[in-house]
Image (cartoon, rainbow, N blue to C red; front, side):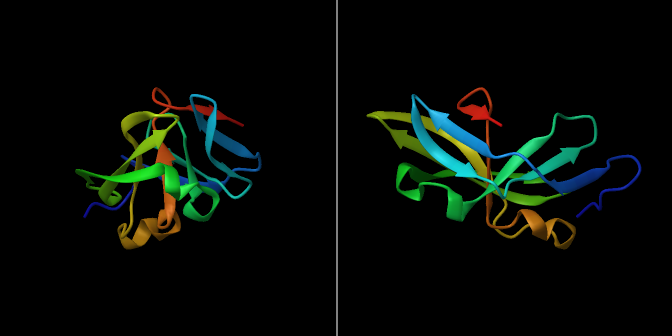
Length: 117
């Protein structure tokens, strides 16, 4: 486990705007409680609470990845409108202690879904 530090800063803040995520015109998630995670020089990523997602449209994937700063990520595919968008969502179900705020939240690949604020 690597802790975020001066060489790799990570900040998590509440996003004051409502965030809507859709795929093919179907709303997958919509929340006023999104978190914005800014990591090093990467673009900020919105993490939406699972309670604000239509989990019936999500199917757990076999894919997993490891981030030395956040922990192990699990993935979901979106199954909506007769189409499957593979591995469109990632989540840290048991993130490292410094990142516990994002536990129970979902992040979406902007090239696979439409994200509006």
